[in-house]
Length: 461
Image (cartoon, rainbow, N blue to C red):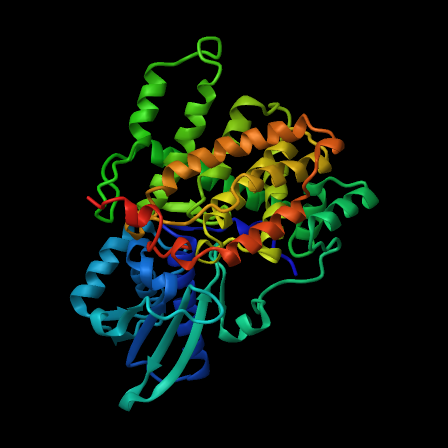
């Protein structure tokens, strides 16, 4: 089962890969299926019910917006974030949706979009049900979908098989564990990023892989740059002010040399991570890495490497970075979870920290064993991290948590690169299984429901 670079790094919009991008994609696919299975039949009405975590934090995460846009045929990678507010005003003013084929469908939001936080569907907390109604109240279709983290969605039948229908197979070096990945590297004399590139090249040309990674990095850089400049209060009613622009001005106008402050680079890493997550919170263009809630960690660490360590003649360094990150991320996707609603924030910020630590080590020339150790350290010290967003918004503690996660990833890489095999007492496979078990044992109120932790102990202003 192949989970590759372009599965884990998806271009989309904020504020959430599981609660925004996933429902948008699921709603779009549902309507497409209705048209395919009912040719020539008009849809008179569409409705949706959201369950579990989707219902409990959906309004703060933009799930309502996502469903409306998905019904209209939008998809996360292509929708213009600046166009979304105008579309929503039109939909709500006219009480109608304009489907991709031009048909207008009556849609009264209070009636046709229900949030059922009292119901949790069996497969995953992020469940939703869509219905399409034809003339004479004829039921054209009814389907249950799940948004399982990182923008991945499956319908009820795919959930039963525990696999999406479009999952690809047939890569030359399949691996389901870190131990298998290291064994392949030893046997074939390949670095982790070369193994991942060979697997990716089974489904697209190497040039397409390189170009795709360049596009991902350019989108991340664009997100950082926009986040450095956009002022104001983040939406949602919590009153959180964007901090990145002021911090950027302070650092730019008052430069500090490494001699004056050896830790000055940390301020820039914090800035880059926060800039991304403030953009995400505002519904801007972001890249899942592997989720939106953790989208700032990989870009901040990649930019740190690019600015402070990359040899200008080493053109493949960032390719190594992202290919290695994807290899590590795929292990979590296969064996645990990247969903905050399923595993808590250890499944988002924890996984992103692990991926970034491994990626940085690889970019700096570490051995496969050191890369695996960096990934293990990155997760080991995020085990048990809860997902408890205040007000159901991807703002507090999410924005600062990305900054801390980026710093932690860099520290994990540095520790691993100074370690020997005798120092490595815990394997990546062991820590991934521990993370999975911890997620299972974690109380539901700490898994993206806003019913525990900071979400109930911080008074909303």
